[in-house]
Image (cartoon, rainbow, N blue to C red):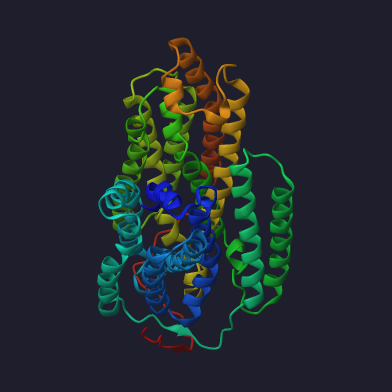
Amino acid sequence: MVATSLATIAGDLGAVQQMSWVIVSYTLASTVMLPVLGKLGDLLGARLIFLSSLVLFLVASLFCGFAQDITQLAIARIAQGIGSAGLHLMPQTIVGTVVAPRERPRVLSVIGAAFPVAILVGPLLGGVITDAWGWRWVFWINIPVGLIALALAVIAVPRVAGHRGRTFDVAGAIILGVSVTALVLAASWASSGGWTVTAPVVVAGLIALGALAVFIIVERRVSEPLVPLRHFADRTILICIVLSTVIGVGLFSVVSYVPTFIQMAYRTSVTVSGLVPIATVFGMLVSTLVTGALASRSGRYRPFPIIGTALAAAGLLVMAFLPPGLPLWVPMATMFVVGVGTGAFMNILVAVAQSAAPHGDTGSVTATVSLVRQVGSTTATAIVGGVIGAGVALGLPSDLDAATLTPAVVHASSAAVQTEVAALYSAVLAPIFIGLAIAYSIGIVAAVLLPHRRLSDHLELEPVPTVESAVV
């Protein structure tokens, strides 16, 4: 919703050059807070963190709508991003705490279906609200909906006990926050600069790597680490982390650029080009619901990531070799297959990782799986965007300027120029699709290495001292 209204927001606040911060501040805050809130959920109880996150999100939405300049809006978006991290993470954690492992894929698939539905409905709804009521209602609309959700959550969400006697890893949280922040900023700056290696990008990248090294040292020494390194010693959890990274790199990084590719290579309008990512997301929606139900029925989960990664890899490989000028239904069908493949295991991974982790680490392992996906998506998106920008700039016809290139400019050019640009975009995107297919192929290998197990029918609780969560 916000992405659709971004240009209107920036123009009204007189901050067109700073409008990226409306997105970056939100994304950065939500990414950094994932492991922090995951651990707090283990310590204080997931219900408390969920309700607190929802209240924070509603208050931040109110202030977003009242913002008078880009600084106020960015600060409010940081608070909104923190709340959104809890809203994304805690439902999965609560399910992992109170639902038997075998039932989790089915329940998580229903929760996970909200993501593709939001992608399908959000942009359209954001445009309608902005045109009808103004951009401030894009944020204020969260309040009545959120209050209903809050009332339902207070009534329906069970109390999830925290664990007494466990301390919070403050040092680890700060160091990991620095590392993730530096990495996201480096990726954002590199992407906005056409993947040019500048001093800020290099410095941010070095800070990210240095902080990550320090974080690993700290986590090895503290008694209660923010991200327990024992997760990476468990083969099942490690493979789930790898597969989650594959999703972030292999699909989310390219979906943003598919519409531009379709507009240029298939010479369609902006509206028509949106049909391809819609087909992808619809494939994810159908697949995640079907496979979640099947996994819960049988208790077996290993076939779904194997089949899913193979389908997605095949679909991306086909995209790499599609000649320009084919009917639009061909790339739509191909990306639908990619969506089906990804949805086949996207939410099952969370259930599998939770079942392999100790009960007291449900929040942290869920956060780790989500964190690597988000970081992988952010980093790969920057790389893909830079490669596309550089490749197009090098191969454009001399009478076109890469800095001012738009689909409208290309469509207004001669037929020969349109054909040349279409061939150029196909040539530039082909190795990217191949690279992403290779990423999914790595996922195939990882999925094959998953242990042959079945999800348990029983919810096993650790006999540890607990303290009941307070109600917000």
